Each structure stands twice: as structure tokens, then as C-alpha cells.
Length: 186
Image 1: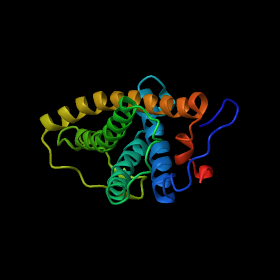
Image 2 (image 1 turned 90 degrees about the vertical axis):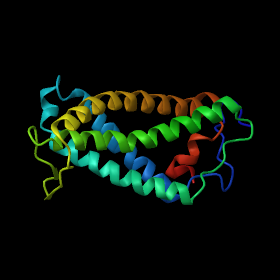
Image 3 (image 1 turned 30 degrees about the horizontal axis):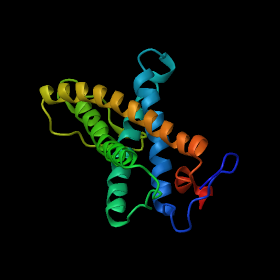
């Protein structure tokens, strides 16, 4: 057990794999950038120019998340410390799976939104090549737009909760849980 002033190191073999860590931090940075652009583009004019990149980042998050989920299914994550209360385990698992669902649903609803036949917007991957539109009606594109906004805010709340929980483990509990996902924690 860690004592105040001495951060706990993760138990040997209890860290995430290099692949899981790379997926985590790459997707985390992309999601945070997209949340900033998506939430702020209407009120901060400079962010409007980022909208083509916002779409490309969203598609990238979708693809990386599919790969991450496949990796996660085939590779068990390290267990939480035995002292972790049952409620905290349940909350951690629910939050992680909700984040996985949102990392798929948010980009898909955005893709639906830009694919409507009447309101179709340019869709490229960082202007290197065009991306296909989804075969959706204008009504489905409108549903995508509404879902994208609601799910985006849900993602922002869950990301904030995830960061707060990680900081709680690192700063208050000092139990090594956060260090398991840090490249330097290996």
C-alpha cells in the first residue's frame, strides 16, 4: 500500500501492454481535440477552420476504436487492485465500456450528419483522399446531427469523469492504478 509522499508503482505484470497504451493515448488526444473543436467551433471563429480536420479525426477515432476493441477482446487488461471496492470496479467498467460505445457512436452520427443528400458537406481524410458518404436520407442525417451533439456532450462528461478518476488514483489514493496506463509506468 502506498503512503503519503510515496507514489505506488504498478505491480509487476499489472501494466497495460504497449499496444493498449498507444491506442489509449492516441485516441485520447484525438478525442480531446475533437471535443474542443466540436464544442467550440460555433463560438470561437478560429476553430471553424478546423472542421475538415474534425471530420477526418472522427473517422480516425472510429477506425482506431474498432482496432482497440478487437485488441481489448483478445487481451485482458490488468486487474484492479484487490482493495478496490466493488462499486468502484463497477463504475470503472461501466465508464470504460460507455467510452468505447461513444468512441464509435459519436463519429458514426457525425458521418451520418454530413452524408445527407441535401446538406452534404465535403468529406476527406485530411484532404488526402475523399471518404464515402453513408447511404442515409435527410431525415437520418438530421437524426445524426441531433445524436452527434447529445453524444458529444456525453463524451465530454465521461472524459472529464475518467480524467478525474485517474487523478484521484494518482494524487489522492497513490495506488498505482494510473501508472498502469502511462508509458513511463512500465
